[in-house]
Image (cartoon, rainbow, N blue to C red):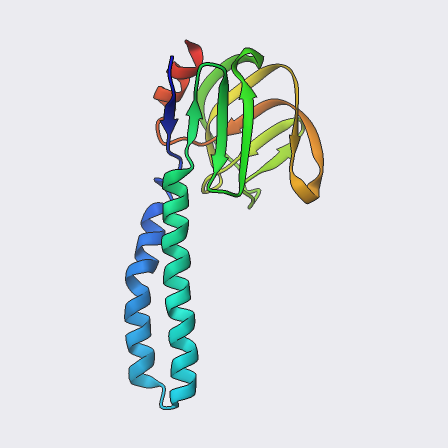
Length: 162
């Protein structure tokens, strides 16, 4: 089958670009309005740091994509998390948008791992056997279903059904 990658950031990328474009305008406005040099210098440093962090986030979302290889489905969100799901453990895969308001990129709800982007998921996996998922400080959970977002749900479903 080979490695196939699938992005998941198309919904959030425009907002990040808007902030990257607006940040230099904000810095210029601060330079024109604030009379104290020391405060302008501090705000300039924060503005530059903000632009760098936004650019770094864009790069991370582009670099660390979901992927499917011959043995595993890799679900990622930048460098925040990465889950490896054996393809043999996937019982069924369906496509369909669900909306939640969990306000977290990853949560476990009633045995379902939910990996949201903008409070939505569009691919759902039912697993043969429970898989242990570590949520860090929120502990490890056994899940029997996974819901996640991908920018190409048709391609993801085709890749997982092979």
